[in-house]
Length: 413
Image 1 (cartoon, one colour):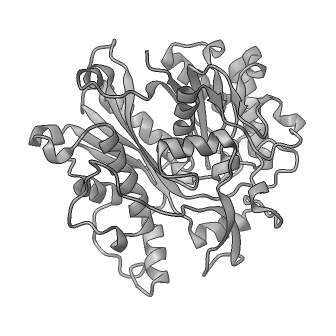
Image 2 (tube, rainbow, N blue to C red; image 1 turned 90 degrees about the horizontal axis):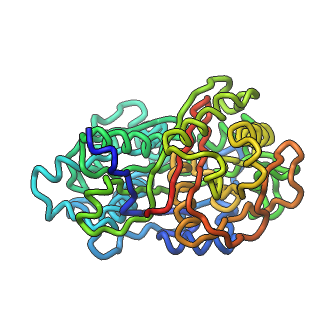
Protein backbone atom coordinates (compact mmCIF):
# COMPACT_ATOMS: atom_id res chain seq x y z
CA UNK A 1 0.00 0.00 0.00
CA UNK A 2 1.14 3.55 -0.71
CA UNK A 3 1.22 6.42 1.75
CA UNK A 4 -2.24 7.56 2.82
CA UNK A 5 -1.06 11.17 2.45
CA UNK A 6 -0.58 10.71 -1.31
CA UNK A 7 -3.64 11.64 -3.36
CA UNK A 8 -4.64 10.35 -6.80
CA UNK A 9 -4.29 13.20 -9.28
CA UNK A 10 -4.97 13.80 -12.97
CA UNK A 11 -1.88 14.88 -14.89
CA UNK A 12 -2.87 14.27 -18.51
CA UNK A 13 -6.01 14.65 -20.62
CA UNK A 14 -6.77 13.51 -24.17
CA UNK A 15 -10.11 13.80 -25.94
CA UNK A 16 -11.85 13.20 -29.25
CA UNK A 17 -15.45 14.39 -28.89
CA UNK A 18 -18.37 16.11 -30.65
CA UNK A 19 -17.43 19.33 -28.79
CA UNK A 20 -13.76 19.33 -29.74
CA UNK A 21 -10.52 17.44 -29.43
CA UNK A 22 -8.74 19.29 -26.63
CA UNK A 23 -9.38 20.34 -23.06
CA UNK A 24 -9.48 24.02 -24.05
CA UNK A 25 -11.75 23.53 -27.09
CA UNK A 26 -14.22 21.45 -25.09
CA UNK A 27 -14.08 23.98 -22.26
CA UNK A 28 -14.90 26.79 -24.69
CA UNK A 29 -17.90 24.86 -26.04
CA UNK A 30 -19.23 24.03 -22.58
CA UNK A 31 -18.78 27.58 -21.36
CA UNK A 32 -20.54 28.97 -24.44
CA UNK A 33 -23.40 26.46 -24.19
CA UNK A 34 -22.67 25.22 -27.72
CA UNK A 35 -24.31 22.04 -28.99
CA UNK A 36 -22.48 19.34 -30.93
CA UNK A 37 -25.72 17.63 -32.02
CA UNK A 38 -26.91 17.49 -35.62
CA UNK A 39 -28.52 15.25 -38.23
CA UNK A 40 -26.48 12.31 -39.51
CA UNK A 41 -27.10 9.57 -42.06
CA UNK A 42 -26.20 6.44 -40.11
CA UNK A 43 -26.97 4.02 -42.91
CA UNK A 44 -27.86 0.33 -43.03
CA UNK A 45 -29.83 -1.23 -40.15
CA UNK A 46 -30.85 2.05 -38.53
CA UNK A 47 -34.57 2.49 -37.98
CA UNK A 48 -34.53 5.67 -40.04
CA UNK A 49 -31.78 6.94 -42.30
CA UNK A 50 -31.49 10.34 -40.65
CA UNK A 51 -30.82 10.34 -36.91
CA UNK A 52 -30.15 13.15 -34.48
CA UNK A 53 -26.70 12.36 -33.06
CA UNK A 54 -23.57 13.97 -31.64
CA UNK A 55 -20.83 12.99 -34.06
CA UNK A 56 -17.06 13.47 -33.94
CA UNK A 57 -16.10 15.62 -36.92
CA UNK A 58 -12.36 14.90 -37.00
CA UNK A 59 -9.72 12.73 -35.32
CA UNK A 60 -6.34 14.42 -35.03
CA UNK A 61 -3.22 12.65 -33.77
CA UNK A 62 -1.02 15.71 -34.27
CA UNK A 63 0.35 16.89 -30.93
CA UNK A 64 3.84 17.56 -29.69
CA UNK A 65 5.27 14.42 -28.08
CA UNK A 66 2.18 12.27 -28.84
CA UNK A 67 3.78 8.99 -29.92
CA UNK A 68 2.34 5.72 -31.21
CA UNK A 69 3.95 2.72 -32.83
CA UNK A 70 5.13 3.57 -36.37
CA UNK A 71 3.35 0.43 -37.60
CA UNK A 72 -0.06 1.81 -36.57
CA UNK A 73 -2.01 3.51 -39.35
CA UNK A 74 -4.85 5.75 -38.22
CA UNK A 75 -6.42 5.59 -41.68
CA UNK A 76 -6.46 1.77 -41.53
CA UNK A 77 -8.03 1.60 -38.07
CA UNK A 78 -11.63 1.38 -36.98
CA UNK A 79 -13.32 4.42 -35.56
CA UNK A 80 -13.50 2.75 -32.14
CA UNK A 81 -9.75 2.08 -32.20
CA UNK A 82 -9.08 5.70 -33.18
CA UNK A 83 -11.25 6.94 -30.30
CA UNK A 84 -9.17 4.88 -27.87
CA UNK A 85 -5.63 5.28 -29.15
CA UNK A 86 -5.59 8.94 -30.18
CA UNK A 87 -6.88 10.47 -26.90
CA UNK A 88 -4.81 7.99 -24.86
CA UNK A 89 -1.66 9.06 -26.74
CA UNK A 90 -2.57 12.71 -26.17
CA UNK A 91 -3.14 12.08 -22.45
CA UNK A 92 0.29 10.48 -22.06
CA UNK A 93 1.94 13.35 -23.94
CA UNK A 94 0.03 15.91 -21.89
CA UNK A 95 1.26 14.24 -18.70
CA UNK A 96 4.85 14.40 -19.96
CA UNK A 97 5.16 10.62 -20.14
CA UNK A 98 7.01 9.35 -23.21
CA UNK A 99 7.04 5.55 -23.14
CA UNK A 100 9.78 5.49 -25.79
CA UNK A 101 12.07 7.19 -23.24
CA UNK A 102 11.01 4.99 -20.32
CA UNK A 103 12.98 2.02 -19.05
CA UNK A 104 11.59 -1.48 -19.40
CA UNK A 105 10.59 -1.46 -15.73
CA UNK A 106 8.93 1.97 -16.01
CA UNK A 107 6.82 0.77 -18.95
CA UNK A 108 5.74 -2.20 -16.86
CA UNK A 109 4.45 0.21 -14.19
CA UNK A 110 2.03 2.07 -16.50
CA UNK A 111 -1.45 0.56 -16.61
CA UNK A 112 -4.30 1.01 -19.09
CA UNK A 113 -8.01 0.63 -18.31
CA UNK A 114 -10.65 1.39 -20.94
CA UNK A 115 -14.40 1.51 -20.50
CA UNK A 116 -15.80 -0.05 -23.69
CA UNK A 117 -19.09 -1.88 -24.10
CA UNK A 118 -19.85 -4.52 -26.74
CA UNK A 119 -16.47 -4.01 -28.39
CA UNK A 120 -16.55 -7.23 -30.41
CA UNK A 121 -20.08 -6.62 -31.69
CA UNK A 122 -19.09 -3.17 -32.96
CA UNK A 123 -16.04 -4.59 -34.74
CA UNK A 124 -18.19 -7.29 -36.35
CA UNK A 125 -20.84 -4.79 -37.39
CA UNK A 126 -18.27 -2.50 -39.01
CA UNK A 127 -16.65 -5.42 -40.81
CA UNK A 128 -20.01 -6.77 -42.03
CA UNK A 129 -21.06 -3.36 -43.39
CA UNK A 130 -17.73 -3.26 -45.25
CA UNK A 131 -18.51 -6.63 -46.85
CA UNK A 132 -16.55 -8.83 -44.44
CA UNK A 133 -17.51 -12.04 -42.66
CA UNK A 134 -15.89 -11.71 -39.23
CA UNK A 135 -19.27 -12.10 -37.55
CA UNK A 136 -19.37 -15.67 -38.91
CA UNK A 137 -15.63 -16.44 -38.67
CA UNK A 138 -14.26 -14.14 -36.01
CA UNK A 139 -10.57 -13.33 -36.21
CA UNK A 140 -8.40 -14.26 -33.28
CA UNK A 141 -7.03 -10.90 -32.22
CA UNK A 142 -6.25 -9.21 -28.90
CA UNK A 143 -8.85 -6.97 -27.31
CA UNK A 144 -8.70 -3.28 -28.12
CA UNK A 145 -7.20 -2.31 -24.77
CA UNK A 146 -4.28 -4.70 -25.25
CA UNK A 147 -3.73 -3.63 -28.86
CA UNK A 148 -3.78 0.00 -27.71
CA UNK A 149 -1.30 -0.65 -24.90
CA UNK A 150 1.07 -2.28 -27.38
CA UNK A 151 0.71 0.59 -29.86
CA UNK A 152 1.36 3.10 -27.05
CA UNK A 153 4.33 1.01 -25.80
CA UNK A 154 3.08 0.64 -22.23
CA UNK A 155 3.18 -2.80 -20.63
CA UNK A 156 1.58 -2.66 -17.20
CA UNK A 157 -1.72 -4.39 -16.42
CA UNK A 158 -4.49 -3.65 -18.92
CA UNK A 159 -8.22 -4.27 -18.66
CA UNK A 160 -11.53 -3.48 -20.31
CA UNK A 161 -14.48 -2.48 -18.14
CA UNK A 162 -18.06 -2.80 -19.41
CA UNK A 163 -20.66 -1.16 -17.16
CA UNK A 164 -22.92 0.43 -19.79
CA UNK A 165 -23.08 4.24 -19.46
CA UNK A 166 -20.82 4.12 -16.39
CA UNK A 167 -18.05 2.12 -18.11
CA UNK A 168 -15.41 4.84 -18.31
CA UNK A 169 -16.22 5.93 -14.75
CA UNK A 170 -15.64 2.39 -13.52
CA UNK A 171 -12.34 2.41 -15.43
CA UNK A 172 -11.34 5.60 -13.61
CA UNK A 173 -12.35 4.07 -10.28
CA UNK A 174 -10.34 0.91 -10.94
CA UNK A 175 -7.30 2.97 -11.92
CA UNK A 176 -7.51 4.77 -8.59
CA UNK A 177 -7.51 1.42 -6.79
CA UNK A 178 -4.50 0.10 -8.73
CA UNK A 179 -2.53 3.23 -7.84
CA UNK A 180 -3.55 3.21 -4.18
CA UNK A 181 -2.42 -0.41 -3.79
CA UNK A 182 0.94 0.36 -5.41
CA UNK A 183 0.40 -2.03 -8.31
CA UNK A 184 1.44 0.66 -10.81
CA UNK A 185 2.89 4.18 -10.88
CA UNK A 186 0.65 5.70 -13.58
CA UNK A 187 -2.54 4.64 -15.32
CA UNK A 188 -4.26 5.63 -18.55
CA UNK A 189 -7.99 5.52 -17.82
CA UNK A 190 -11.15 6.51 -19.66
CA UNK A 191 -13.45 5.16 -22.31
CA UNK A 192 -14.86 5.48 -25.78
CA UNK A 193 -17.79 4.55 -27.98
CA UNK A 194 -18.96 4.86 -31.56
CA UNK A 195 -22.26 5.51 -33.27
CA UNK A 196 -23.62 2.12 -34.27
CA UNK A 197 -26.51 1.56 -36.69
CA UNK A 198 -27.58 -1.53 -34.75
CA UNK A 199 -27.44 0.26 -31.38
CA UNK A 200 -29.42 3.19 -32.75
CA UNK A 201 -32.09 0.84 -34.06
CA UNK A 202 -32.22 -1.03 -30.74
CA UNK A 203 -32.52 2.10 -28.58
CA UNK A 204 -35.06 3.53 -31.01
CA UNK A 205 -37.16 0.35 -30.62
CA UNK A 206 -36.86 0.63 -26.84
CA UNK A 207 -38.20 4.21 -27.17
CA UNK A 208 -35.13 5.49 -25.33
CA UNK A 209 -34.08 7.95 -28.05
CA UNK A 210 -35.54 11.39 -28.68
CA UNK A 211 -37.96 11.43 -31.60
CA UNK A 212 -37.96 15.19 -32.12
CA UNK A 213 -37.71 15.99 -35.82
CA UNK A 214 -37.38 19.77 -35.78
CA UNK A 215 -34.13 21.41 -34.64
CA UNK A 216 -31.56 18.72 -33.73
CA UNK A 217 -29.80 21.04 -31.29
CA UNK A 218 -33.04 21.11 -29.27
CA UNK A 219 -33.42 17.32 -29.04
CA UNK A 220 -31.39 16.71 -25.87
CA UNK A 221 -33.19 18.53 -23.06
CA UNK A 222 -32.37 17.03 -19.66
CA UNK A 223 -34.75 17.88 -16.81
CA UNK A 224 -37.12 19.72 -19.18
CA UNK A 225 -40.80 18.79 -19.06
CA UNK A 226 -40.77 18.23 -22.85
CA UNK A 227 -37.84 15.79 -22.91
CA UNK A 228 -38.58 12.58 -24.79
CA UNK A 229 -35.35 10.58 -24.86
CA UNK A 230 -31.60 10.84 -25.17
CA UNK A 231 -29.36 11.63 -28.14
CA UNK A 232 -26.55 9.18 -28.88
CA UNK A 233 -23.03 10.51 -29.19
CA UNK A 234 -19.56 9.14 -29.82
CA UNK A 235 -15.95 9.84 -28.95
CA UNK A 236 -13.29 9.03 -26.41
CA UNK A 237 -11.79 10.71 -23.36
CA UNK A 238 -8.75 9.42 -21.46
CA UNK A 239 -6.77 10.66 -18.46
CA UNK A 240 -3.45 9.86 -16.87
CA UNK A 241 -3.77 9.18 -13.16
CA UNK A 242 -0.79 9.27 -10.82
CA UNK A 243 -0.10 9.49 -7.12
CA UNK A 244 0.49 13.08 -6.08
CA UNK A 245 3.98 12.40 -4.71
CA UNK A 246 5.05 11.01 -8.09
CA UNK A 247 3.43 13.87 -10.01
CA UNK A 248 5.04 16.49 -7.79
CA UNK A 249 8.45 14.87 -8.13
CA UNK A 250 8.10 15.13 -11.91
CA UNK A 251 6.83 18.72 -11.58
CA UNK A 252 3.75 17.72 -13.58
CA UNK A 253 0.78 19.94 -14.16
CA UNK A 254 -2.11 18.70 -12.02
CA UNK A 255 -5.63 19.26 -13.41
CA UNK A 256 -7.37 18.04 -10.30
CA UNK A 257 -7.63 15.40 -7.59
CA UNK A 258 -9.71 12.23 -7.92
CA UNK A 259 -10.82 12.47 -4.32
CA UNK A 260 -13.62 9.94 -4.05
CA UNK A 261 -15.45 7.10 -5.75
CA UNK A 262 -18.80 5.51 -4.91
CA UNK A 263 -20.49 2.60 -6.69
CA UNK A 264 -23.64 0.52 -6.29
CA UNK A 265 -26.03 -1.58 -8.37
CA UNK A 266 -29.79 -1.92 -8.60
CA UNK A 267 -30.61 -4.21 -11.52
CA UNK A 268 -34.21 -3.41 -12.41
CA UNK A 269 -34.58 -3.07 -16.19
CA UNK A 270 -32.45 -2.91 -19.33
CA UNK A 271 -32.86 0.86 -19.74
CA UNK A 272 -35.33 2.07 -17.09
CA UNK A 273 -33.72 3.04 -13.78
CA UNK A 274 -34.98 1.80 -10.45
CA UNK A 275 -37.83 3.93 -9.10
CA UNK A 276 -36.36 3.68 -5.60
CA UNK A 277 -33.38 6.11 -5.40
CA UNK A 278 -31.70 4.33 -2.49
CA UNK A 279 -28.88 2.65 -4.47
CA UNK A 280 -28.15 5.58 -6.78
CA UNK A 281 -28.12 7.79 -3.69
CA UNK A 282 -25.75 5.36 -1.96
CA UNK A 283 -23.19 5.70 -4.77
CA UNK A 284 -23.15 9.45 -4.14
CA UNK A 285 -22.91 9.20 -0.35
CA UNK A 286 -20.12 6.61 -0.60
CA UNK A 287 -18.17 8.86 -2.98
CA UNK A 288 -18.47 11.74 -0.51
CA UNK A 289 -17.37 9.47 2.34
CA UNK A 290 -14.40 8.23 0.30
CA UNK A 291 -13.41 11.85 -0.30
CA UNK A 292 -14.03 12.69 3.38
CA UNK A 293 -16.35 15.51 2.37
CA UNK A 294 -19.87 16.53 3.28
CA UNK A 295 -22.67 17.48 0.84
CA UNK A 296 -22.15 21.15 1.72
CA UNK A 297 -18.54 20.95 0.43
CA UNK A 298 -19.66 20.30 -3.16
CA UNK A 299 -19.77 23.33 -5.47
CA UNK A 300 -21.12 21.68 -8.65
CA UNK A 301 -22.96 18.49 -9.60
CA UNK A 302 -22.59 17.19 -13.14
CA UNK A 303 -25.72 15.07 -13.49
CA UNK A 304 -25.94 11.91 -15.54
CA UNK A 305 -29.34 13.17 -16.77
CA UNK A 306 -29.59 11.96 -20.35
CA UNK A 307 -32.97 13.53 -21.21
CA UNK A 308 -35.18 10.50 -20.57
CA UNK A 309 -38.54 11.02 -18.83
CA UNK A 310 -37.99 8.44 -16.09
CA UNK A 311 -34.20 8.62 -15.73
CA UNK A 312 -33.89 12.35 -15.10
CA UNK A 313 -36.61 12.34 -12.44
CA UNK A 314 -35.06 9.29 -10.75
CA UNK A 315 -31.67 10.96 -10.62
CA UNK A 316 -33.09 14.21 -9.26
CA UNK A 317 -34.64 12.16 -6.48
CA UNK A 318 -31.32 10.43 -5.78
CA UNK A 319 -29.52 13.78 -5.63
CA UNK A 320 -32.09 15.20 -3.22
CA UNK A 321 -31.85 12.06 -1.10
CA UNK A 322 -28.02 12.06 -0.99
CA UNK A 323 -27.42 15.79 -0.58
CA UNK A 324 -30.39 16.62 1.63
CA UNK A 325 -30.91 20.35 2.15
CA UNK A 326 -27.74 21.10 0.16
CA UNK A 327 -29.34 19.74 -3.03
CA UNK A 328 -31.26 22.96 -3.62
CA UNK A 329 -28.14 25.07 -3.09
CA UNK A 330 -25.62 23.27 -5.32
CA UNK A 331 -25.69 24.24 -9.03
CA UNK A 332 -26.51 21.14 -11.09
CA UNK A 333 -26.40 20.68 -14.85
CA UNK A 334 -26.28 18.02 -17.54
CA UNK A 335 -23.65 18.52 -20.23
CA UNK A 336 -25.33 15.75 -22.28
CA UNK A 337 -27.60 18.56 -23.49
CA UNK A 338 -24.59 19.67 -25.59
CA UNK A 339 -22.45 16.55 -26.07
CA UNK A 340 -25.16 13.94 -26.45
CA UNK A 341 -24.71 10.64 -24.60
CA UNK A 342 -21.29 9.11 -25.26
CA UNK A 343 -22.48 5.82 -23.67
CA UNK A 344 -19.25 4.01 -22.64
CA UNK A 345 -17.31 7.27 -22.82
CA UNK A 346 -19.91 9.42 -21.04
CA UNK A 347 -18.51 9.28 -17.50
CA UNK A 348 -15.02 10.26 -18.65
CA UNK A 349 -16.37 13.14 -20.74
CA UNK A 350 -18.36 14.42 -17.77
CA UNK A 351 -15.32 14.11 -15.48
CA UNK A 352 -13.55 16.34 -18.01
CA UNK A 353 -16.46 18.79 -17.79
CA UNK A 354 -15.97 18.89 -14.01
CA UNK A 355 -12.29 19.69 -14.49
CA UNK A 356 -13.31 22.52 -16.84
CA UNK A 357 -15.60 23.84 -14.11
CA UNK A 358 -12.72 23.73 -11.59
CA UNK A 359 -10.13 25.27 -13.92
CA UNK A 360 -12.40 28.09 -15.14
CA UNK A 361 -14.61 28.61 -12.08
CA UNK A 362 -17.72 28.25 -14.21
CA UNK A 363 -20.81 26.06 -14.10
CA UNK A 364 -21.64 24.61 -17.55
CA UNK A 365 -25.32 24.95 -18.41
CA UNK A 366 -28.09 22.56 -19.28
CA UNK A 367 -29.12 24.00 -22.62
CA UNK A 368 -32.73 23.58 -23.83
CA UNK A 369 -34.00 23.64 -20.25
CA UNK A 370 -36.98 25.87 -21.03
CA UNK A 371 -39.45 24.55 -18.46
CA UNK A 372 -37.95 22.45 -15.64
CA UNK A 373 -40.02 19.39 -14.80
CA UNK A 374 -41.55 19.62 -11.32
CA UNK A 375 -40.34 16.06 -10.70
CA UNK A 376 -36.76 17.22 -11.33
CA UNK A 377 -36.58 19.90 -8.68
CA UNK A 378 -32.93 20.98 -8.22
CA UNK A 379 -30.84 24.14 -8.52
CA UNK A 380 -30.64 24.09 -12.31
CA UNK A 381 -28.36 26.17 -14.55
CA UNK A 382 -30.44 26.67 -17.72
CA UNK A 383 -29.18 27.89 -21.10
CA UNK A 384 -26.04 29.81 -20.06
CA UNK A 385 -22.98 29.05 -17.96
CA UNK A 386 -22.50 31.00 -14.76
CA UNK A 387 -19.33 32.14 -12.99
CA UNK A 388 -18.88 30.76 -9.48
CA UNK A 389 -15.92 29.48 -7.46
CA UNK A 390 -15.63 25.72 -7.99
CA UNK A 391 -13.35 23.67 -5.77
CA UNK A 392 -15.25 20.38 -5.43
CA UNK A 393 -17.46 18.62 -8.00
CA UNK A 394 -19.57 15.47 -8.05
CA UNK A 395 -20.14 13.63 -11.32
CA UNK A 396 -22.91 11.02 -11.55
CA UNK A 397 -23.08 8.13 -14.02
CA UNK A 398 -25.98 5.70 -13.88
CA UNK A 399 -25.56 2.96 -16.45
CA UNK A 400 -28.24 0.94 -18.21
CA UNK A 401 -29.04 -2.17 -16.21
CA UNK A 402 -28.19 -0.68 -12.81
CA UNK A 403 -24.50 0.36 -12.71
CA UNK A 404 -24.36 3.42 -10.44
CA UNK A 405 -21.27 5.56 -9.98
CA UNK A 406 -20.26 8.91 -8.55
CA UNK A 407 -16.83 10.53 -8.87
CA UNK A 408 -15.69 13.37 -6.62
CA UNK A 409 -13.11 15.59 -8.31
CA UNK A 410 -11.59 18.53 -6.52
CA UNK A 411 -9.13 21.34 -7.04
CA UNK A 412 -5.46 20.50 -6.52
CA UNK A 413 -4.00 22.18 -3.43
